[in-house]
Length: 251
Image 1: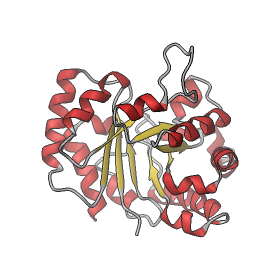
Image 2: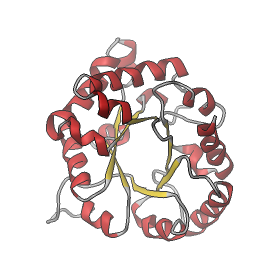
Image 3: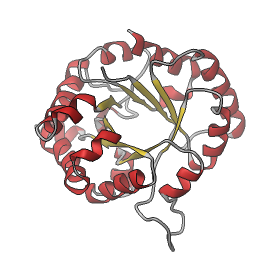
């Protein structure tokens, strides 16, 4: 049985004071929680602080992005080896905001995926379609192309040490959420695609839903057969909401 996961993506939010108060409440609220993998992905400057605050807990720490390069004259970039030095466990690659706002292609995302794994970091690969693409009936083609670009570069075996996240772009930060049935349909599609190459890897691959996950919809989402947890945005900045979302993995 696949272990449930909930990761909070704080995006470009936070301060030393805010993070200390937030994590204090989250850690207290999740005390004793061992059956679910819970993680936080803070902005780069706070990775070491979050790692320190979570040091005596089961919580994981992830980065929101990573460079495809090992080192070099790439001002402003952060290598996977540097994240590994900080004890970072996971790295988000291919988030829709990186694809849309910074022009990251699926080929570039594949390179970041592989760079993460080479440094011992588990990549969380995000795929998802825009509202226009969904309305045009292109959801399947879009998400499978994004997934296949990484499989073609890294091989399906790489997904034995990776996490997949379906995040419909039209449901991120909009307050809209895919219905549990809509989300499950895409999750099943993604798992089926991997299963065509390796049934064992597909059976164990954790696929998260990310798209305005809240304490009010997490329960219905997490009971779907192929949804293994959530990649949580805004709600992860509120301790009570994040704790409640994590609790739904026990249902």
